[in-house]
Image (cartoon, rainbow, N blue to C red; front, side, top):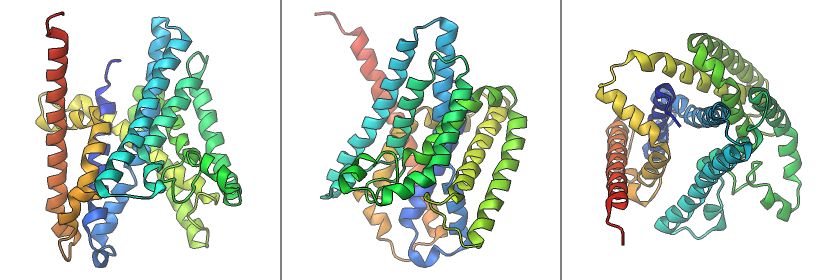
Length: 347
């Protein structure tokens, strides 16, 4: 499928935001976590997950639309998207095992954790099975997102009293401690949002950015007002509706701005090339940087005493550069493997 530069640019920005989010969280010591600088890093840290989810939904919708243009069979498109989502999902579990072994983890919760790649992959599978063949896939996506979001608080409350065996089955769907980090309810709603809005966002990015900014601001103010009145910021409380709307609107706004910005940048710009490379290799970026933030490979940095936001910044920038270098190195190895595979003599 043809790449959309604006979407890859947004995905690259999400990668940088993700690296800084994890690195500052891993490196900054407790006394410095109450500073304005650290608060700023947490504000940016809220963006990567909804942005990745929205972009995943947009990717599914674009693939479905291309299938319609080509006259492809519904089952063929479903199979391709379900396979793609399953690969991302299984990559998440493979990384659970790899990082668990690297760090000497001995608990089931580490290996069975349902996290970022898991929720993205599962969401792609769900949308990939639902959308192909629909007359109005955007409407199906919007309905799915709305239902998913509205059902989150009652389902989460019901899960609290569920039997232990049933709770294990609910791990991908709801917040089940200690296994679930990123549940499908309500995060699937962001993926559905992306699928519902991809056409209008590409057609009118400036308008979408303006509307998205207003929606995010209104939802954020409403959420803060509810929290100030004692509402818990929990997935079991209706305040999660405003929280999800706020973050989803921020993500759509960033995508729209990226679509506006991408055509205005010089195609030969090194910065643009780096961001696009990060965006196109976002799954590997996720896998490559984590051990240097939270894993054994980051132990020496985390052991540095009195690490403030300022003193952590060179390490954070270094991790960004290291991750980019590892990504490009993996690109080179992949290209050489493909060249060898397709040019070796037949036996």
